[in-house]
Image (tube, rainbow, N blue to C red; front, side):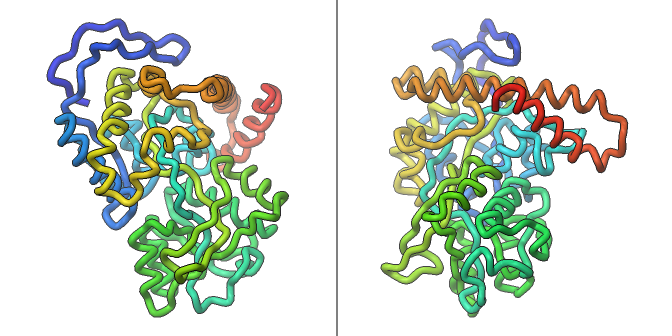
Length: 378
């Protein structure tokens, strides 16, 4: 982030936690954010928010489209961007799972700034003409798999568990990105895909000759939902009415999670994070009519989100300043900070003590991680 002027401030990191930003921290001139490509709901959101922030605060937000989640994480890690705008992959990065279980990655010391408490669906879809109606029906079918997006793939696996299925029960078809996977339904390359009913590409499927159908994830089956949330803790049941794939008055029992989320490394300047959080919250009146998802970004609604990654110190400072940080949030924050340390220490130990094939490391790490978390009471 670039600034007109930087004052000499006391900033240090002790045990990985940065001091809060001082009240007179200088507002940044520009912020770069790695996000999704044009055609996605995320790109539309960042564009609308960026315009509003510029109008109200004069800070330029540069939205940098990157093809997949790992690419966005790389951009953040290498300092090519200041912020990562993510939906679910940031959670896999924090936990060190999926694409981030490799020795070169591991659990990332990241924090959230603000989460949009989306009430839009993000779950399994197929074509309207497909014989697939339940998760169990997906067995033996072609399932979209997004290369480099462990967040989406994690949810794919979680929803399959609702029907008692695993990845071994489906034929995975790889796609280079989220939008490409959706269009795979239209082209006939895949039978089932993870889709958001807020995405323009999802509307493309609904408008295609084959149409769009949501696969119900029944909420009454509590045990099945426990299996879903065991694999993806941020997921929650959701009922959608109308929209792509549904006629007026029709509904579907599906799932969703907070999305998008602004993410930064813990070491990122608390001053900068404070200001970005403040600008996103306080320019809401300017973008509330510009993006369809605006209600989920309104601060009171946004802070209802279930968060599974700790907030950044700069964001906590801002939310405390406006009286929105609650005792329950602080309790969850401290538990997640403890989890952060357990994950970081366990990975360092696993990495230093491993001498086998790099391809086998993720499986070794998974066992070491589970043992460390259990020992720590998680």
